[in-house]
Length: 192
DNA sequence: ATTTTCAAT
Image 1 (cartoon, rainbow, N blue to C red):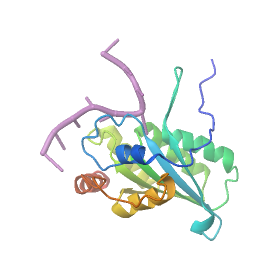
Image 2: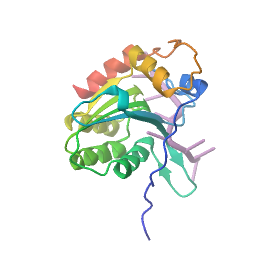
Image 3: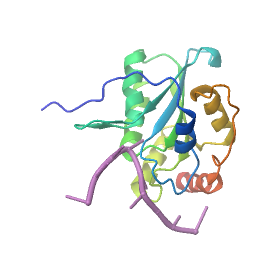
Image 4: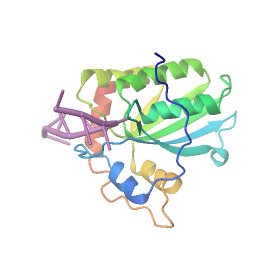
């Protein structure tokens, strides 16, 4: 039987403001956030100019026969969209949940394919951070040269401006930074 | 501070 492979799908353009406010806060107790959002930007070439970056949003897919984490959706989309492996790429992710160990492995393989690609991950929350194998997944990313950080106020504002269908509404931090300090300390501890 | 989270005993 053929293993199921996630097929590239088009990313969303923008997230609904309420979806952003529900799914993105730095919460330690993130009850009900049973989805993961990934906002990305891809800059190409020698000059990483922000003006012509490719942007979009992925969410994990759930099918009766298979699942696809948001990161896997991105990776398969990227391989399809940017087949050139030698080009210089600067990729940034803003994630609502940090990658699971499987996705971390797949990202490391992806970075081995694209030798001139740099990846920065800003995550709002740490997914199962107290499980050793999840911690190890994050360390593998770090060791592979991925920049890893907890989403800060500036990151939230950047996402609001670029990935949220804000219809002119001004950015408000509200509870977005609620457990930032705890999560940032925890991430430092994991990567130490 | 310590838990239920890329849904499902």
